[in-house]
Amino acid sequence: MVKELLEIGINDAHIDEHGYVYATLPSNSDKKVPTICWCSHMDTSPDCTGKNVNPVIHKKYDGKDIVLPNDKTQILKVDDHADLKDQIGNDVVTADGTTLLGADNKAGLAEIMDAVHHLKNHSEIKHGTIRILFTPDEEIGRGVDKVDMKKLNADYGYTLDGETVGHIEDETFSADAVNININGVSTHPGFAKGKMESAIKIASDILSLLPRDTRSPETTEGNEGFIHPTNIGGTIEKTVIKFIIRSFSLDGLTRLEAFLKHMVEDVMKNYKRSTFEFEIIEQYRNMKLMLDKHPHVTQFAVEAIKRSGLNPHQSSIRGGTDGSRLSYMGLPCPNLFAGEHAFHSKLEWVSVQDMQKAVDTLVNLAIVWEEKTPESAKAK
Image 1 (spheres, helix red, strand yellow):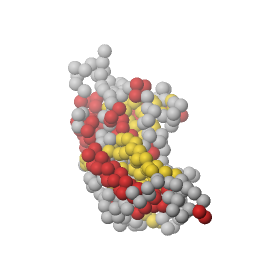
Image 2 (cartoon, helix red, strand yellow; image 1 turned 90 degrees about the vertical axis):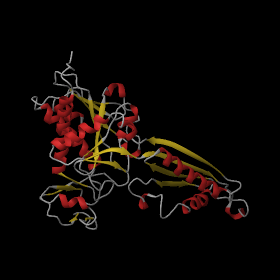
Image 3 (tube, one colour; image 1 turned 90 degrees about the horizontal axis):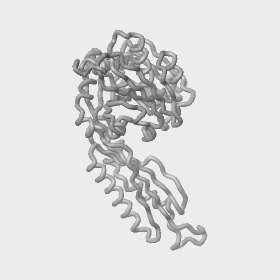
Image 4 (cartoon, helix red, strand yellow; image 1 turned 180 degrees about the vertical axis):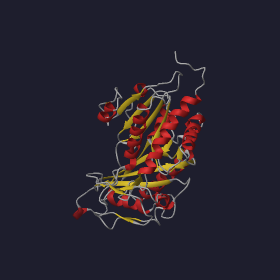
């Protein structure tokens, strides 16, 4: 990424010791336009392999199910992916059925690169300073842990990490992780009667009590939150269960955590000599609480989407982005569409035409910020 940025004339492009790429497209306006940041993440989901990706371009998509060539059990079905109906005649990109495609979020990287390249080669388009930030580790909730905000030096930001064309997301989950550390009692199994209390079985009891019809990812939608176990491992003596907790409100987050802790306490009553620790780790918070203080950031994006010939659609995202945390680090940062679909799976796809619309939106966004800056704000 740094090599390509340098090749197109972005002279300060560099990668730091933590894997972050920083770069600057300087202003060519005579106004003092606020500095905006365009951000995407380089990492892909650990839920599915992204090694040795073999992308396949299905040109002039005909509206039928797409069978991925190297694993014919992987079928991109129109009935399961409604947005495919809007792609007829477009060029749809998938992997070969054995890996992720990586459009989440490499589509965003490519779109930012193309928009920067376009602005660099069209000096007649007036814009303010644009800061470019490519991050690692977004998929595990640590994407901006080591961002140097002073070096970034931007006033407002936009992540390109969204799905359907025309969408802008100005609300996310608030998110915590919870680690339950269970300390059992281990002894020789041949002499364990009345003595052993297996941390593995205690963990199993806890998981068996999780609601089956509510409060889980597979049973919730819209603004409903959930409790989701993501990892379990250990021994008879010590076992750890890792959860993620999600809710659009902080009150909802607290209630879900209290529900889980109460459930654990009930289980532990059956194991008098065992103990547990309930560790809550803050991950990110709903960006809307910050964006509502700076409504023009979202409004300018809506205008840019309109100028790109699209119908803007403001929505919430049942997840988080780097922008969730950046918004609380002093950089109000909604999420723009990148065109990626079916992320975190081997059926991931994006279309060339949707990516081009994302590029158009970025270019128009730069224009809108420059135009909306009053003439009185002349650069000194």
